[in-house]
Length: 624
Image (cartoon, rainbow, N blue to C red; front, side):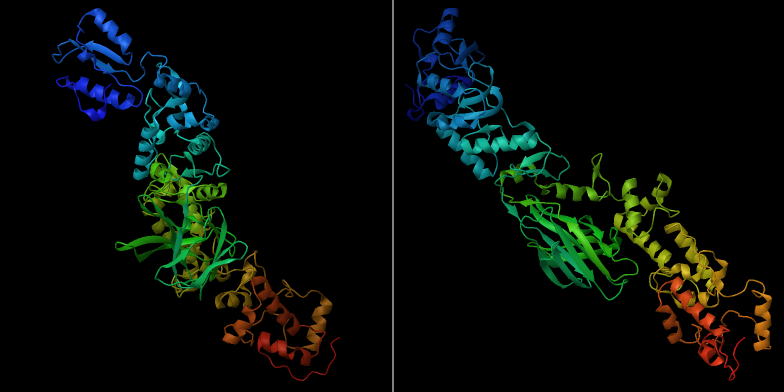
């Protein structure tokens, strides 16, 4: 019998024949030797010899020689056949392994099967050259060697059967082959995830965020914790939705790293940010986690979905560049600035972490998801779909610079602070092209936020007026407002929150002088004025008799001490009442009291001063 350790006694064989013999000896030596047919003294190149050789060595095929072999033929290995001796140990082992024709993991309960067999979960080719799903022969030593090689390479084993051919990995990167009961369960989990459409579950199914949308099992795969990096100029609190704090502190232009808890994907978090005023309050940042090929970073804007202070998606306005240190060097990251409502200085941002990062040494990570994380929950997947600028269409990001999708541009318009009613809302490709031409998402969001600031506040972003001329100021403000919100600006009050206030001095003057009477949505400040005449002849006679030389009620005048233009204190008193309607009621009450004929002059004196700046002489008469 031939042994690999005894050297090669068959010198002079053609290279192909020698290679075949070495392969056959290595494969079958534990059970039987294979003698070289070239060493049989009576062998010849005749047809009968060829037939006898095939009968004796069924695992060898003979073909015409092309190397000058003395026999004129030489053997070639046939991987799907075995020696014909039905009583051989190899034949018995083949029968043992291939008698299992399912991928039931219970097959490994048989010690003999577990030792020298593997289980194919997809069809391969058995010893008879037939398609076969189930057991295949793979000697224990070879099996362990292949498995150890895979461990060193941090990959899945690529098993090669002793007899027959196992299913190949193909595009799945991992064979559908198990070598013991534990690996059998792992393969079944992997197949269940890949053929299903759910997240999580007992098999811990996940999708790699590489755009392929394939599902994999993360069962027994160790997770790693990502971090949030934040910058700003304000105080912050990061907490779970139930209020349990994760981190708090003060942000600056130096990145603050916040390590997130384990298994954070899909859980609701709340990031509260507050600053001195709306113009300086902002937050920017990104989520960072380790992948096989390096760090993966996701802008904070893609993680937050609501600001409970404004009850809308948080506003976006431009970008900020963060410099931070890594193990190798200093790196820069440009991020979108997230801003509070235009009149607010506080944000309460709801957010979801949509990713799970895994141990980069795990074969699942290395085979399936080398440069992106996984998503393992429905909540995480939903969060990923919330931002239409963070999707893929036709192999390209919907937020790609200069090529943003229509839906992405519409989202940037809304999140910049403008509305769908705005005249320049990108509802058509023609209007979208004007925004797209600005370039990146951050450039577009900065431009839209600038427009929204002018449209809503009625002044430049730095707080300065459009013009010192009131009429010109309203014209300029109207242009921005119609473009951004579709709302026409006609009065000084339109630039403020007319419902709740506060309003500016120009709006107070507009209301005090009753210029609002020309606009139906506001109406007259003073409700007791007659339209063109006295309400009745009796009223006229009574007023003229008691107050000779005076006129019927007229609007409050510039001489009134409550004129908002007369002092800052007067303006603040009126402003503190709230919105336009409340301020009108405040002025109207003064006017009514000043003109209440049923009151004495002494009772009316205070109101006459406030409305007209008039000191009444002592009046002891009783109004008739």
